[in-house]
Length: 122
Image 1 (tube, one colour):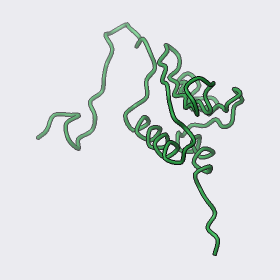
Image 2 (image 1 turned 60 degrees about the horizontal axis):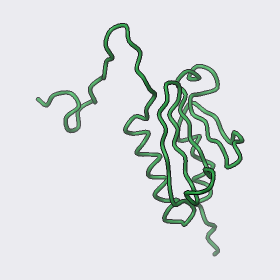
Image 3 (image 1 turned 180 degrees about the vertical axis):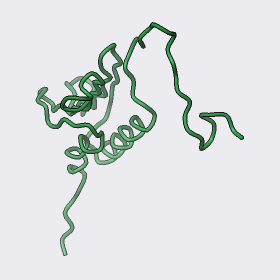
Image 4 (image 1 turned 30 degrees about the vertical axis):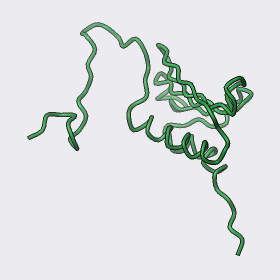
């Protein structure tokens, strides 16, 4: 039998030292996989060219840029403290406006994924 976290088994839980809170919020592997998959498709479509990630005590942020010298075209933020309120996921637009909030990452990424859809003429 494989140890937890090896191969197809469930991932092992990471536990901080007793009495200590983790220093930063991070994306889980499946969350980051979904975000980077969308990023790759947007790069292939010519929309994005660069990205940045920030991990703070209260939030983890993924920012996608059209050009590295501009402000981010989209910013995806994970704030676990808002989990029981409007949802821990937020999508911000280029000018900082909130485009979507939610409890599920897939629903928050939907407005960006719609940009990739192209109408098929019959």
